Image 1 (cartoon, rainbow, N blue to C red):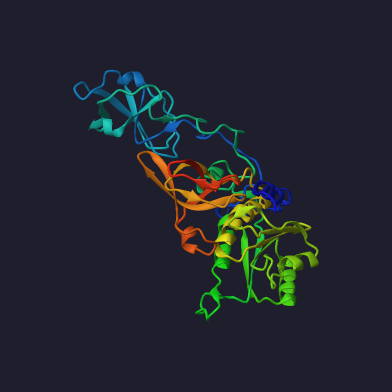
Image 2 (image 1 turned 60 degrees about the vertical axis):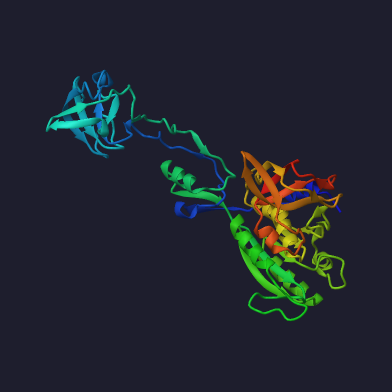
Length: 402
């Protein structure tokens, strides 16, 4: 049995990055960027108006107020997309729309709300504006050749907009890992079946499928294989041939019908560890064959969920080239006494609540490995080291958010 920190290090050092593909920008959301991106132009590409109003010489607005309006002559109208060749003179204003290029001679824009048109060719201004007021200057957002995105990040919706702004209609991203999911055990049945005596529904495979999607992989569910040695071996061999990652549930402990680890070895997998000093999730198996990764997760639903979050998620991220994959960890105050088993790193499912500008973490009830509600209600896990056997109410703790 190895410590959690050692186990996750072993996982990450055995992950090989997948290749890349080029996708159209509309397919880039949530993909992992695999190239550095630079701006091909200044953005904005020219000085432009930040709002509808009037382009003016700022000095012409000095002293303007509702009780002392300044009258300016209208000289031009500039809609967005038009470039005016007129040069503004003293005492003049030009009607301008949001995004339109500032004409020569003007150095500010007065908001239309601070004006009143008093004739076809004159306006009153009721407020002064400083030089540069309501003007967006060329390159104030991005400079040409400036690096705007680094390889190894997940592409968000704002990033898609940014990529469009710098001319990237097509972008290089990582391939998505193919993740095969296989449940083992005579005791489990599919969700549509009312479990007869001695049976339980297979809930965890559907969690794993959903979580693979969330992490950016391509999941394939291969159903339930009964505790038959040859059938399990045949199915695992089949899945390994078409998947980058294989995730099995059940059959990894020390029971009479726990065949999975022996089958892994017979199929030539190099088993890197068989047990991790964590709770829940102690009987977790990790191995490798070539570039293929396997995880044998415990059969208990919550154990399987936690070990997926702690081991499989970082593996998927590593395969896609995500740099510095980490979940958010926040300081909290324990909202009740918590007792745990010393000698293993404990992941206690907790709900977060803010009171009086302080963040509290409260366990979500019974912490058994089959308690689905305990993880459904949780915002994250309280991280308790192997040396801890209890936490007192009011004690400072750290919580890793899901």
